Amino acid sequence: MSEIYDIGYRHYDGPRLGRGHTVRALTVHSLRGIFGLGRTARSKIMPFSLVTIMLLPAVVSIAMMALVKQPGLIPYSGFAVIMQAVVAIFLAAQAPTVVAPDLRFRVLPLYLSRPVTISEYVGAKVAAMTMALFLLVAVPLTLIYVGELLIDLPGPPGTGEFFGSVAMALVLALLLSTFGLAISSLTPRRGLGVASVMAAYLLSSAAVPVIYGTLEMSGYDSQARWAWLANPFWLVDAVQSSLFGTPSHAEGPYPGGPIPAVLVVALIAAAMAVLALRYRKAASR
Amino acid sequence: MHILATEGLTKRFPTVTALDRLSVTVGSGVTGLVGANGAGKSTLIKILLGLLPASEGTAKVLDLDVATRGAEIRRFVGYMPEHDCLPPDVSATEFVVHLARMSGLPRTAARERAADVLRHVGLAEERYRAIGGYSTGMKQRVKLAQSLVHDPKLIFLDEPTNGLDPRGRDEMLALIRRIGTEFGISVLVTSHLLGELERICDHVIVIDAGRLLRSSAIAEFTHATESITVEVEDGAEQLTARLAELGQTVTPHGRLLVVKVLGPETFDAVRDAAADLDLGLIRLEQGRHRIEDVFREEAAHV
Image (cartoon, rainbow over all chains, first blue to last red; front, side, top):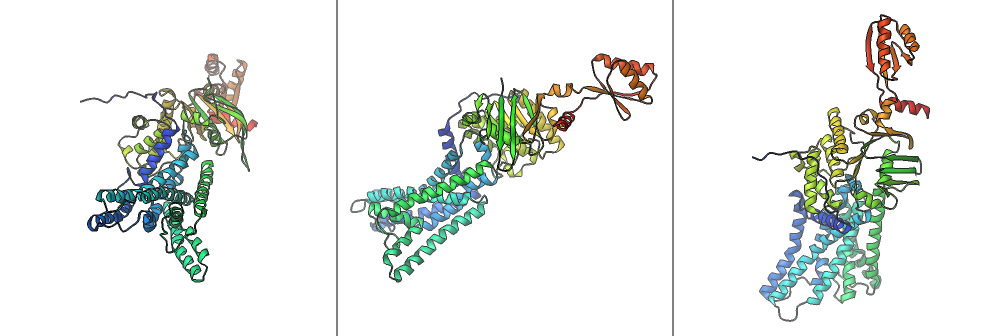
């Protein structure tokens, strides 16, 4: 039997790594938290069931390609729009877990008393949420694409459309994560954060088709098109449409031109500004 | 070498002046920062961490200017806030490992250091359980552990004994003393209770309403006021007169006489005087004043 000796306090003289390391560690830590890794089994249920739901259409698409030798049900460019409810639920359920606990339990001062700065902290959180949403959309897309290549359908594979949709998935992920985090950072209560993000999404997804329909029926066709830009998924689809010439995945056409892209950039900047203001206030407490 | 030094440090908020031209230096060891609630202790710590800009004046920590080299300071300084700062749903181990990494320690080093400091602060098997179920004493230990995990040169402990029962308070104070001596880490510890700091500090700084009342070594605090308390059955007046004749300074305090200690001869004088006058000596004790008394005296002068 070995005996345990009290060897007293030992000093640490190993390496102390720089900002790159801490920001990366915080990003990975937050990303793991979003998927409930290293947490209780209960916190894994929501993210993993949503990931499974996202993968189902990919599996069905591959099965159809293999059996009927026909392109899958869902086009690459329309995947995010068609699956938008699932992506939105993921955002609403998981964005508050990224920011709310540190604010509610006042852990933030412990970060700030270390070399981590407030902008590095917020940057790492945004990066983690963006990565999670990107994986949520891009993994099923990639699966379908790999399936398409392996099954070897007649005609060329939709490589251009696939890469375009993956790029747009990243833009969508950044837009959604900045907005989701900005909304959920305003309330330190997680439940309230979930409800607020969900309400914001439902408002934009339910109201937009109604506004579009009303305007179109009243004969304001060209004005009606702008309505789609009020929902983040259709907004990003509109950008994709004007960048890559893909068809609209809404029930009507989008306004063309650079406006949708400008709007995306402006919205991301606005959400970042809200985050910056929110955290500047939180830091001075 | 000074661990920290401030020069004319002033912090004004829109409605109050939290620090008013504070100039103070702190050496290594355990230093107590004493003041009532709202005296400016927490504000001072935030400025020293480089988290709050000063309105006027300068401050240096580990010879680094807080205004410009905050990030470097925070690499070698630990901080235990006064308020709750622990998420309930993670274990102490996970939490402390994560914060070690936030201080720049590589993954394996972070794990080793976290295990080490949690052992030193006295958290055993419970460190694998979620913090939500901990007692106040255990939570304070986790807060202390996270401030030590990156092996800082200096730690700021803001009211570490807050909310603890008398036993927990004693254990926490003993631990702080060990950190300052055995671990060789300098400590700046705040409290509004003067008595408890007296037991563990080498040096005490007293501030009130953001101004420096006093800063000196603990020995000076108690030395300057050393006296003995004498009680006799009857004839206190006679004794007072006799002691005065012998050149001693005597102050009557009701039935008690407080005699200022000039040296070993004071004790002899009391003994001889009592014997000569044939008085029944009931009490002869070292009347070491507590810091409280000094604080009260100083506060009365201001």
